[in-house]
Amino acid sequence: MGSSYEGVLVAAGVDQVRAALIRAEVTAIVAPVGLERTALLPREGAYNVADVDDLGCYLSGTCGFSVLAHSLYDSDLLSLYVYRGGECVHEYQSEMAYLGTPFEDDDGEMKVELGGVLYDPDDESLPSGPCGADPEAFASFGTGDVDLDRLGALLRGEGLDKDEQMFAESRHWAVAQALNLQPAPLTEAYRHAKVSDYPGAVLVGPSRD
Image 1 (cartoon, rainbow, N blue to C red):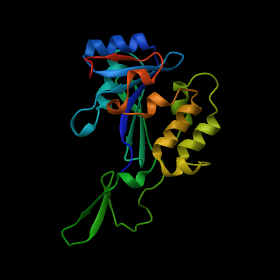
Image 2 (cartoon, helix red, strand yellow):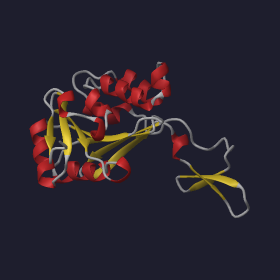
Image 3 (cartoon, rainbow, N blue to C red):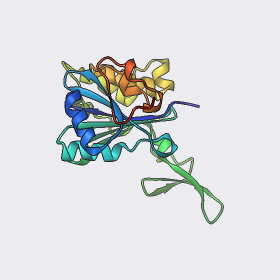
């Protein structure tokens, strides 16, 4: 079984993010990952899933931060969502093939539904590969000089090493490095993390001890 986690990168300092989470009564670990860049590991709810969409809307809308939310599913699919002004303005999926929903139609034929369109499983037009792999959509979340060519290649799945090809969390780690950020707090789940794992991190909300 692969890894799954959700989290948020905020273009703001730890103290600002912490104050925003306290106002919203959100429980999370927050950790600095670069100059005025903060990772947020939110406490999971049902099925060990954290709702990063609500966080993205709140932090970008009410609080006015630029927000990059992420979700990793079973080491297979990396999803990135850019939020500004309370809305998701850009979406990235590392592999569209994992987003289709297979089902059997009334005639007993297998179909795949993706984006409201029905496909035969062997239809060559069934979307696959990455979607939304625009490095400029993510570059502003980095620090220093971001190599757009390197970032774009990672998002497109080009030039990956063996682990980056096999495990979506390895690609996520590499994307964080390409943004000149500390990857560890961005690639872990709240349920598996400790505040002591990350220099400068703080816990917002009740202690788990």
